[in-house]
Image 1: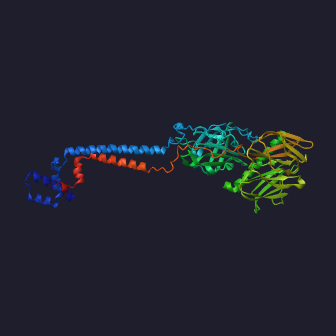
Image 2: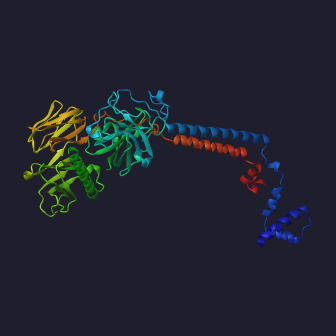
Image 3: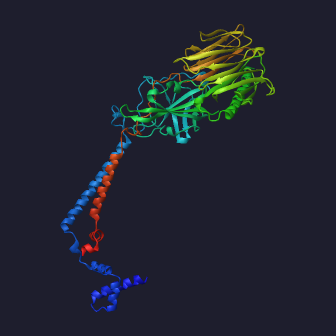
Length: 273
Length: 292
């Protein structure tokens, strides 16, 4: 602390010395002990400022340049973020033949064609038709609509990406056989009802509420991904001897040339008795 | 009377199903679905008293499960079991587990296949048969086979509407599967002195076993759905996505990130230029000695 005290004193001494030339020799020797820095600081503080400023004209010019740069920077940032967001969102507007349908959030076109409803089997008479699908693990609770087959023999898909549908050509959930429920992974603009289907794994539960309020509970036994060009229709739609449930959606890479995903995700579950 | 018999049968069925579940809990922990098959058990010998059914995994002397008091006409649901060899043995109801079985059979369950192990024939000639059950149908068709388990009517002819399914099926025999046109049919079974009929829907893509059974008063039909699939398998893969959440192939976020980064840098530089205080400039960027 003594050093700091000396320093303070020497600063006072220095100022006093410059203000009044009658400083003592003792004060001068004290000031010399703490070096020149304090004295220099004292001089700098009193130096007239304008001498070291840039000429006002140049300064204004530099400031204007800064403003312009700042504006350009903000613009560039905005441009970058906008472009990033747009390409990340994929509006689908660049897809050929689909421009007219884009922009209707949650609404996707139904392929045209006759919907086929086949009569229910004897074993299905006791099992009411399904009305709601609940998958607690991924927070899905959706009304089930009816799906048939389109005129080009493909599976009809729900008109809304927010709903799943039961294929009426398949057994009712809870009856013997593989019951098919299909839903969209996404619409043109965002996630669909089965967006998180890929997160499911073996052992997790799925419930189907039937028209009479009864609930069929299923347990997942397999989560599989199939390439669309090798989709195993016989395995997915073919007969099985016990009551099963198959949830079908899309997955994998999206092919912008065809406007279609390249894979399907199929969740298989068996009835818990 | 008929209703009572039916309830008794349903009751027995439930018992068998429940016990089969017990079997599964013990025998099939976490078996992969690809490595398992299906098995169901049936007692279709009319004059054989109720039996206790034992199921052993092969070369294991301890039964995986014992299903007590299985009576004529009882057919269990299919149960998924790990692929492998099993022995099914029947003992008279209440007989000691150590006593020699009345009859036994070995079934080799291959992955993805389904089997019915059925006690057939008169009590004196009881046999335990392993039936391989079909799991595929011709496109748009149904499959039907007949198990003739009526002792009172030795030969039975079965028709769906006017079309013949099987003629003069002998007691204790099992027909091959027959391809039938899908539809809801009046399925009739006629023996020499007794006959019965039942409305049965044979949907496309379904496989049925129709059992002819002795029942008090008359023969009757039991329709079992061996397996069921979609009536029509839709073509191709379902179009269940429109790309709204897809990442663009070959698309990289890097150029946009670079642009944003550059923008932020330029903005910052401009900001500093505009806001730089003059005194701070003199003090901060040049040493005191340089200003002297």
